Length: 139
Image (cartoon, rainbow, N blue to C red; front, side):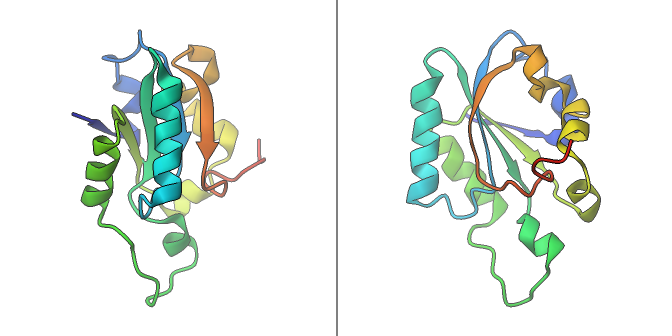
């Protein structure tokens, strides 16, 4: 069964500290064939590593550029259910907000010590599907 961890609680996630992970970051808005291929990639690459995704509770685009005509492809609970069925062990869920969107990558890692490469918790990011969250390339 997949464990769901709100980003705010990530620092307190001690159950997996001794386990390194294979990590993918993205919205996974429809868990479509492309997303499934990425998830298969992290579960295959895992080989002794914990397959982990970092995702968002709502699409960043809906927060940054609201459009009532834009539909959410999957309810968040269904998205998490599908990710778990594909072999993801832990889903870290970020409540994407206008404040969060202003966070730089450096600040994100400072506030997410478990995701920092220096902890050794993850061995590599397999993919980043939405480079706008946090702001890509901004230290």
